[in-house]
Image 1 (cartoon, rainbow, N blue to C red):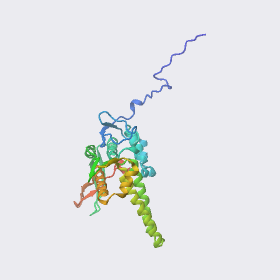
Image 2: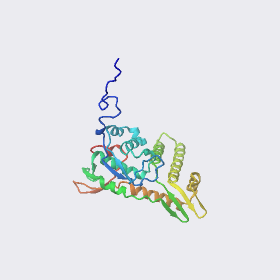
Image 3: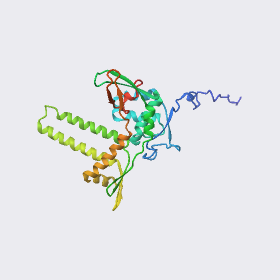
Image 4: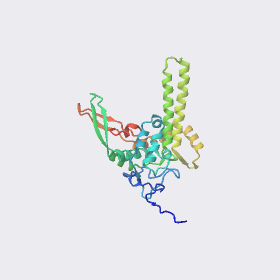
Length: 293
């Protein structure tokens, strides 16, 4: 009996683990520097780069379909999945600082559709539809130069701040939407005045609590001449009981940081009547990733 085994062509064997198409998989299109410089990420949520540069891939067909799922758009899941797909170094986009989100989405848009984005808008004066191109690379460069101001001095207090996480921002947005629905119910003529007042008071209290929680989430530590604390319960108690001047100082600083990283409104000029007007540009939605958006 011949015990010699037949030779197997490993290269062409269907059982090999190497996909012969792997050489045709998508490759990084651009590299970006995160506005956070890789800070504020919990351990394991970012595969930190030694040179601060992160690869950005174009979207797949599956990624594009995510932006056609209304529920995924509303709760932020589509954004999370696409960032994971296109910037694989970000392992958990839910906990990424929000100061990185816009830069990530702009970079993904550039990698997928190119450096310019076509926008259309109707002139507020003559209603003429105007079409313009946005130079996305300019906005990406601006975002990458952002410097988060993490320390705020308010009198004797030194407040150490951190950016919101994407999860915190999304959750706060959903809660705010819920309260807006309550205000719509209040305008219902079928409710008597007493019921309207009760619902309004409850909704107002919920929105106030949401504001306090949002500010609290951004405070990592507070230093005083008597000592410092990073205890979450103590910080929340402080935010609830701080004077208006202190609360406003912290709140305004956080708002200024958010505005500084937001994509600025685009100043346009109507081709028909030459009226100049501003158009807001948003990124965390499906039309930002439409091929002709």
